[in-house]
Image 1: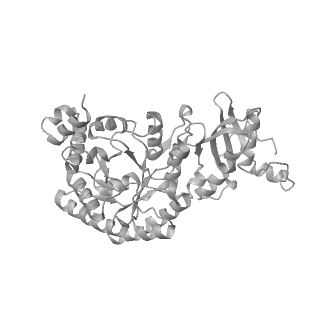
Image 2 (image 1 turned 60 degrees about the vertical axis):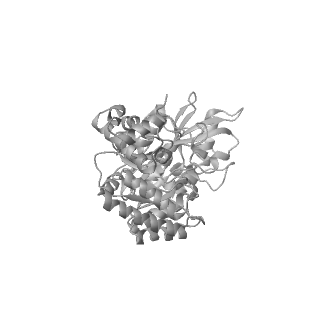
Image 3 (image 1 turned 90 degrees about the vertical axis):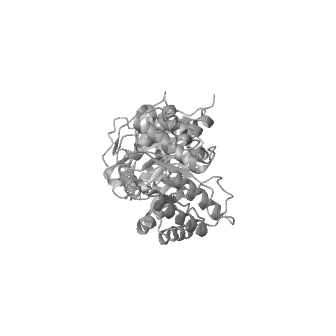
Length: 428
C-alpha cells in the first residue's frame, strides 16, 4: 500500500469531490495509517505495492487526505473527479464507500458527508417538480401541506383502502399515500387500488374545491415492473408516485427519475430501512448524505424526521436534512458534520415530517419547520375519536390556529374535531 496520501497543505480544487469520514482504527493501528489506507482503498490502491501504478498515474489520480482531527476522529479526503463516472450515484458510492467498510484496520468507519463539485452536479437533473412544482400541483403556496398514510399499513381491500383515502381527503388532507410495505399483495392489488383511489380523489376534489393527490407505492421487484406501475398511474391521470428508496437501490432510483419525467409524475421518497446504515453515529453513512443523493438524483420530496414524533432523529439532524432539501447553498457546520454544498440550479426537495404525529403536535411542527414542510399523519388521523375525516379536519384546524397565531386550546372552543383531538392526545 502506498502511504503518501496525507497532504495537510493541500487545497481542494473546484473539481474535487470532498468526503468526510469518522474513523476508529483497530487496536494497534495509527490514526494516520488508517486514514491513508482508507483513502487508497477508496481510489487507486491495493493491499500491496502494484507495478501497474505508475508515478504519473498516481500523481494524477491519488487522493489527498487534507484534514485530520484525531480527537474527533474526523478525516477529510479530496478525490479527483476523474475517478468517477459522472452522473452515476452507484459508482460514486462503490468508490468512496465500497470496500473500505470491510477493512480490518478499522473497527468503525462512517461516511459522514460528500460535497459534490459543480462539474459533477451538472451531470444530474435534480428534482423535476421539487418544492415549487409540488406547490403548483396542489395549488397551495402559503402553508404546510397536510398528508396521511392509509392505515392499517396492510390488510385492507382495495375498496376499503379507497374509502379510507376518501375520508382523509374529505376531511382536509392534501395528500394521501400508501405505506412502505403496501405494494401488490393479493388482498390489495396495485392496479385495482390505484384505479379506485384515484377515482375517489377526483370525487373529493369536486366536493371540496381543493386539489387532492394520491401517492401510490410503485416499489417492485424489477425496474421493468416499477416502470409499468408508473405508467399505469400516468394512464389513470395521477400526478404522483411513491418509492421505497433504500430497498430498491440507487440504480433503480436513477432509472425511475428518467421514467417519471417522461410520465410527468412527481416522486415521493419513503426512506424506510435507512436506519440500517444511518442510525449508528460511528459506522455506516449519514442520513444527510442520503438526502443529498436523493436531491442529486431528482426525487421531489423526502421523509426527514419530525423531532417531536416517534422516529429517531435529534433536532439538529432533522434541520440539517431540511437544509439539504430546501437551500440553494448549504453552509458548512463542523459540529454536525455537514460540508458546504452549493446546489447550483438544482431545485429544492419538499421535506416531509412523518412518524408518530398527532394533530396536537402541529404548533411545534410549524415552529420548527415553518411553512415549507409536508406534515404527514397516520394514526394521528385514523385514531381520532370521531373517525378519519374528523382526524384530517382536526389537523387542518390545528394548522389554521398556528397560522393565525391562536393557541390550539382557544381555537378548539369553536372547533369540535380539534377539541376531541386535544382530549385524546393531550390528556393529563
